Image (cartoon, rainbow, N blue to C red; front, side, top):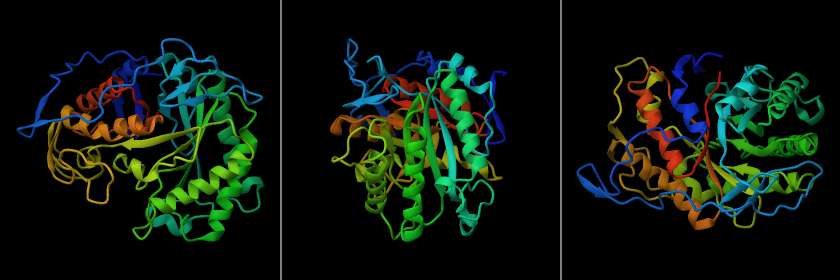
Length: 381
């Protein structure tokens, strides 16, 4: 594997990413404790990482195979050591290859996310949900309602990762399908997860189950509906496997600004995930054939009154630099500190054609290190 990673049809250097996988500083200046933001002083909210335990925590096995455990803000390995997830998403379309696991482990990764695209329609293709087209793995006639070839590919990736002693987050993607008003899909979704829980409950190195990555229900639905779907699914999964941690995240698309809306105080052994393609006006501009602008720079923040996190510059034109990015990350660190739950960034990345993309990623990954936020880069191939 060369020192590059294929990212959405573009190539981006791995040097900065691999350094953070090994938890090394990116040798960037941290800047003063108080800084100027848009000409005004800015106050960080709940920045910094929590104090790590100074000794291993006693762990009592609760499953036939060893599992990660969650206690407060921390994720612990089976030998009782705190673990910050760091690694890759292996992407879609079964693009992973056998050597990826060992390569990732040598880079310093400790976890990978492997996707199952189920009842999956993307954008205009949402009408094809459940038709088995494209990446959609739904199969009404198969065990667990999962296409056997897709399940075999998922099993292969799990085996590759576990052989290299990488923890695996089994993640289901639902695209734009109707998980909100369609009772049939809801019931089948829970049935599918019951199958997956039973299928993987005795396999080693299963880190977690991500129930529905990046939920984005229509505007008439809210995170109350997302939370209700999660609660019903958690109940079903826990009846089969009560040891493996479960990962949930807020709509729309794991928005870091909406963590409070998805909080479930009645649930345990839960980790919370957010995306960090921030700010989208910068990170996602490479999708459009137009003149592009660089980093740092002035961009429109996408936050609004419906978001639960308040931060300096919400919904305004902001000067996006390292200071602002850390302020926005405060939505995650403040949530973590308030509720004593683990939070990690399940997807972060940028297209290399974006001006000063490497400088941006160096800053973002260094901020994750400073604030003790785990992450998975999207995507490895």
